[in-house]
Length: 174
Length: 337
Image (cartoon, rainbow over all chains, first blue to last red; front, side):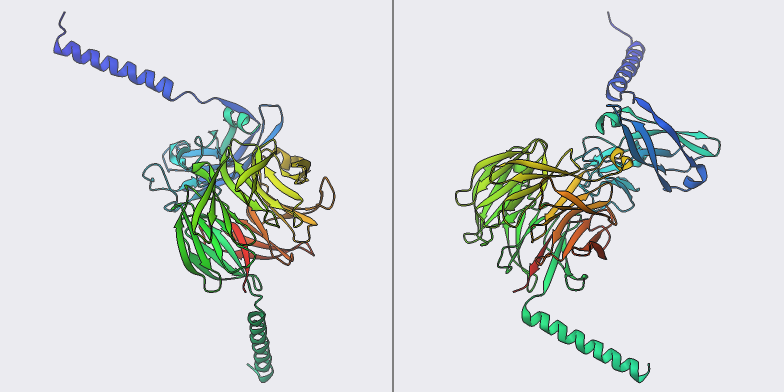
């Protein structure tokens, strides 16, 4: 049986959609978050400008049941109509050897696996792993096995509320 | 400016000049070489004044420095271009560069200056470089990632500390360049330091905030020193990454990176007893001590600083700000001939 050109095109589009959905479901697994012991609140005005950031302490319970103090950073990566857009929060502990990363404006001296984006990056001072704050903290270079661990960020009136952290960090730092 | 002030200034200048001359004539000027892990140079600091007096461009990402007893040469290794760089400490000129293994790290040299043990991290070996023949004469494979080496004071043994998937300190005989023993540290060994009498090795390890004391006659762990931390500090994960023994053999200083603390232990007893702790400006990493044991220097890559502590009074005496982006780590002191 021969398919018409239009049917072929329709099948291809459907196949492409299915493939894309399958790829997304396998390549981008949903991130699992866990509640912090108590939420962290940051006034929205403290991160009103692009690249303004606030460091904070967040408490959680690690995978073995112990108290865990997580140093975090809330940063605004872009300005948008919705004040929640462009707000991201990460654990400062580098997933390589848990040194604390810092936001570096000029990362030209850092060796990256890819062409460096034209904006500040988080860089680990110990072994120079680099992370992109505009791409969920993903790894851009260095010995780190993954990107930065993330906090979930939400708006609560005129505050930013951080109440959950990526579950993987609780295992990693246990 | 009145006459009295002018006279005082002249006296100060004259005294300074005489002191500088005395230092030079006695040949006692000491330089602290600080490796810029994020750059391509070593910063030079005058130990007498704690001031930066220059720098040497040695090559990409210097990651190791060693000085023999003669103090007439300084050996650097550079991680980005895999070179051994030999420098004259009087002129700070480069005398030669030699190709070595991939990703060289913290090396050490036998006291007589004959052999360098150079960890080549990506090759999984320690290379033995003969400084007379100017060539590599042996390659010693280890588990993990070769990273640090420390020689015994008598030069008979080199202690090798590979990081990563390895829990062993390797003991190499410097006459045969072969491994004669291993010591299990239970977790991956990191920076190491040896006591001046050669009887004890102090080892930072993964999973430990403190250091282990290794008995080098029995080749086994004798005790463990734990940092004294508050409950809040214990809940914040950190790591130990810097250890040095004072020349009198009485104290060991060690760093706690994320808590920004430096600890001092009395090691005349086993297990060692904590006798001081300092809040360091920036995350402390590698440490070194002056040959007279008076000053300990602590490097902080996060703040681009080197902090000097007076050993006797246990006080911070200087914070030396390096140019931004240098990420200082390893350090060595040369006493000029």
